[in-house]
Structure formats: structure tokens, C-alpha cells
Image: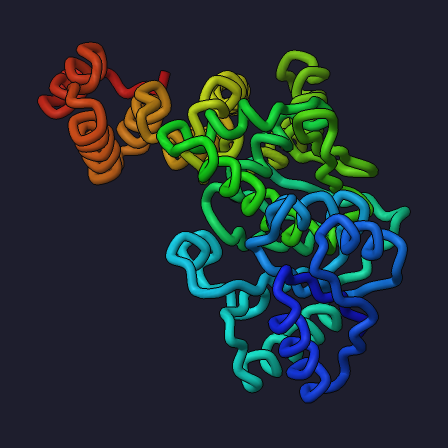
Length: 379
């Protein structure tokens, strides 16, 4: 591997070069105490890894890393610094790309080995192949259709930053907005450093998908550019909009489209900015699911009706109508145990989560059913 070293202390640079030479397998092609000169050289040279001190004159090491990664997103960066409480907390002592001065030989050797392993394991995704990005239910990325990779984010802020930029894909989001958005109670200088750190983590995570997902610095903000990316949420929205009314001829199309819905939009994340979008499309799914269940029920396909009402109860246990429909079906089938089970499940959920009781119509029906005063009907 070819490396460039940047540190404002000449002695520190020489020591780091000596240690790297002892490890072997890394060729030092440049050493710089001036970050501006370093930046120019990094962009010109064919370099694999950058050993970079965080505390530099003229430009902070994090800012330099950000500028470099704009042009060379695949460059591996190893941060080097003296012990500093804030830095240690910010990087959480990353064993791969964070080194503390003075650098022990064995520690540096382990870092080089991990960088080599990372390079060897990095996926080579064909530029012509689409990348499937899933935001319905659990977030994942599929370089190959049907083989999801669940992304492990370094920090929660890195996950939220990326997902917000994905939410706004193709649009510029100002750095000042992101700072207020992600760190509203943090002093500006520290919040700025946290933003650069988080941008670095996001770019590092996206490195293997760089042909499809690129985080670019534009003016005074960032843009997430996508190329040949299929977002499951957009795919589902477009297909659900084109469905005709539910009928015997369209029911199979409904089932196929509804199967694409794996859960609410960014369901695994508690992001306030995603709530309205999630709620709106949850209501669309619920409406369509109820239409399917009712279609089966009206056509005397009780098994199909039970299946879809059960789907609704599973994903949205607060939906009283689906519980009520199942209670009526089980009463018609003379299955009192399941009638009681659904009523008690609904009652318990509403009480624990919302502090309310089932609506009066359901309570009245349930009490009448228990006394045997209801006619046998599932409608």
C-alpha cells in the first residue's frame, strides 16, 4: 500500500515513518507538515492510505479528511493524535483508523493488517448492476437482489445523517442546518467538528457502494447523489398508486404489490422528520389491506380474510376494526378461545399504550356474544 503522512511535528512524522517501515507492506510516498501542500499531493498521487494528525495548523485534520474524500472516496484514512478526551470520545477508540501517540509498533502493525483485510473484503459492485436500498421496515442495502446487507453504522448520528440525506436525495442540505438539526445543544465549534467526523463515518460506510451512492460537498452543504439505485419505498409507492379497485381480476396484483411492503418507512428509527411520511403511507397500506380482507370476506373466502386481518393485527395492533372482524369470524366458526384472545389482546394493547378501552361498539358486541345473545354471522 502507498501512504502519505501528515503531521505538523517533524519529529512525529519521522517516528511514524520509521514505525511504518518496520511493519513493512506500506510504502511512504510523501510526508508533510503543511496540510495545504499535503492536500495538493494527495489529489495528485496514487495513494491508498493517509495517516493524518487531527490537530493541524491552518486546517483541522477532520476538515482536510473531508476535502480529500470528496475527490477520493475510497481513500483509507487513519487518524493519529496525542491523547485527547474529546477526540477519544468522538472516535470511540476505533481500532482500525484511530491511533494514539506515541504509536506502539504492535498497535500500528495491527492497524495495517486490518486495513489490508478491509481492502480484501471490499465488495466490487458492477457499475451496471442496480443497487437496491430498502427503507421499508429494517434498513438494508442489496448489491444483489435478494441478498440484503444490514448496514452497521458507527454512531446513531451517522445513521440519521445518511438517512436524512437519503430522504432529501438530490437536494443540497446546508451544513448549518445539519449542525442545528443533529446537535442543537452543542457549542458551535464542537458541533462543527462532530459534523465533519460524522460525514467521514458516513463516507467510510458508503465506500463499497460509491458507484451508486455518493456524498458530495456542494457550496456550503452536502448532497447525496444516487445512480442506478432502486429505493423500495419509491417502487412500492409507484405501484400502489396504479392499482385499480379490488376485484377478482385485480386481487393477485394487489397481493403482489402489497408483498413489497416490509414495514413502515424507516420503521426502526425514531426520527421526527420521517413520522409524517411514515404515517401517511401506513394509512395507505392499512386501507388497501382492509380492502383485500373485506374482498375475501365478501367472497366467502374466510381463510383469506383471516390471513389479512391477522396481518393487520400483527403490524398495527391498535387497529380495532381488524380485531373486531376476526372476533366475528371466530365467533361464527364457534371458536370462543380465539374470540377471547383477540378481545383481550386488543384491550391490553389499548390500555397499556394509549390508556383507553376498545370502542363502545366492540365492547357491546363482546358482552352480548358472551351471553349468547348474538346471531351467528361473521359480518
